[in-house]
Length: 235
Image 1 (cartoon, rainbow, N blue to C red):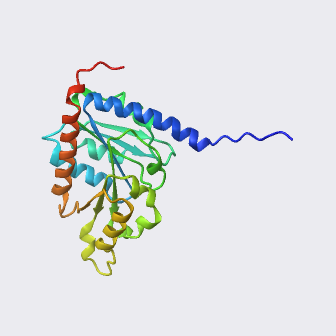
Image 2 (cartoon, rainbow, N blue to C red):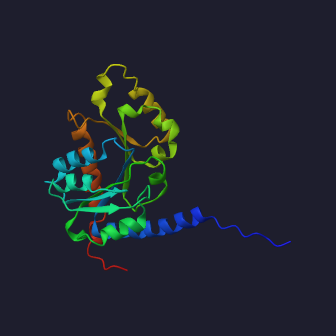
Image 3 (cartoon, one colour):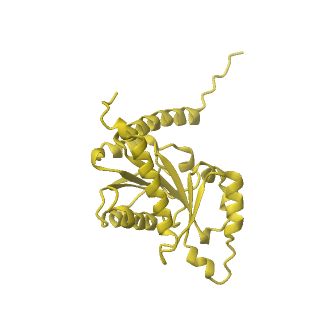
């Protein structure tokens, strides 16, 4: 009886993606470019948070944005209007961004004149959590209207992120609001003890300065830690 050879396609894809992601991380480190992978469900407020972050940090850091969408360029046009270089990745069906896609975007960017790159990943809480983009840090947004039980339904997304931004907190005051910050904090603490949590509202501005102050420190620390590598030749 002949044997059946099993090839795990997903594992092969993820392995190849991780290899490319490691190459990206090394390139960013050598250029002292901090890249943040921002993930969330559709409509959670990714673009709004990016715009508010750009407005608060663009006088301190040189910022660029990589926009991921299945179709359309609506979000990239909004971000570009803020005066920052923007690259649109239109996947045509893929529900996540991966390292090869980010590699293509980076090839079009002048990394010597960029300090911070923000990736707006595809609106999805499943696939983006599995695919490493080569980012220095990962953050996710959870909007109040989505409910505090999302962490129970999508634990991987919450567990891989360095920061959790709770958005649209102005909805906490609305009629029938049953989102419990303490319940979410306890669940997040059990799943990802080191993950930072921020409560924000792009409508009122609440919490945005705290979020940007934390991000600015992470960027500054990263750049300082890799300062001596700036002049090293590429391998």
